[in-house]
Image 1 (tube, rainbow, N blue to C red):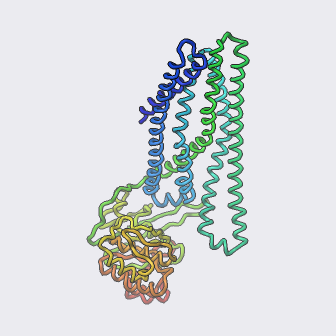
Image 2: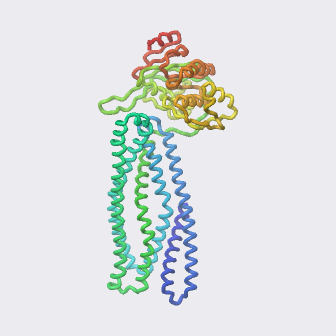
Image 3: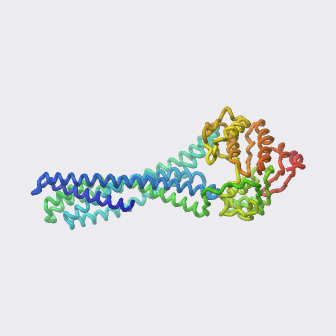
Length: 539
């Protein structure tokens, strides 16, 4: 690809130089005759059009391939990064990079074919000028070098403003997320809404406007400098060269003609500079994110072996997870050390107050968090970076902050129509949702209904371990009853290990164990015979 681009670009530039020379010669044909010149013009034009077309097609394919590979690589990086690292980076930064920076960089990459064509034209014109008169060409090249140095100095401040604007977009994406997720609360409280708009939206957008306008002004100043220098050069050729040198008239005419011929590609290149500056800033941001993700010991994302079908035993031996301290004066939350053993065919309830570590326990149990100390074992084998991806395939989880996909990704629904229909009816969803091929007919439902569909998806996964984090919190009593008295016992009867994070103590008697968490530790374990005590508030 690179060799082809170089060859076609050189040929395109040479064709441009030949066209320029032929047009100049056509103005003073001399002994050649117009027919010969016209034939040469047609040949040069054909060569330029052909090489330009080939080079642009190759560049477009190359640019599109770069952008698509970049998108895929970034997505794979995110999927391979540890969950806690992604949480610390924050959704606004990830979204700005994946959305805004990729688009900006794509725009910069996609104008490369046009830039390459214009550079080829300018290179061809430069060759022609050097052929006309090497001394005059060297003088023009010296002036162009001075102009480029000053232009670069003028652009430095513009680039600083563009970089500040890019940093502001991180904050703006965070504001957008707050706006979307908090729109109900903002609508219900006028003072809160007005204050949010004034202190967040207005301030951030005004900051972005200021930096963008400042950058554009500085780019315009640099453009004015280049245009002024260009016309000073033309004036020197027109008025200074005849007085100071014995430059032939046809050579002088060729120089002026070439200079005018070069105006369009030169202005096109200057117009592309802001796009390339933004693209460079976005590329740096993508590299920074990539470095942050890579520094966290990326996990394998290749397809893991199938999860075991036999009995499963999971052990947490003095497992501990610590969150980073929010400040120098505060200690981060610590879960553990946790000693826990889970067996196939049992139901374990996990309860405790808000902030006691229930969700953190779920993340560490399922392999989403690496324990800082201690060990997690599966059937006696320690879980480490080499087998953690395979270990995760043992779990079907409905998180408290679950996400419902519109398609049954990774699941084969063929031949399971009766099973799907039965569970939809059991969850009261048979008249609202259907499964067509591998797609849910709709996910535009209430939060409780969406959670029931997430439960359906988990059932279809058929993994050895099921974890439900506050699944019944927003369900009607009818569906709570179905969940606790029918679905969980059914999973237990199938030999599944079931872990349920819940506050519904009236159903604790259905479990094999009830674990109570407080301040990151298991403070009490209740067996079925003592479940009645737990239901009265003993936990």
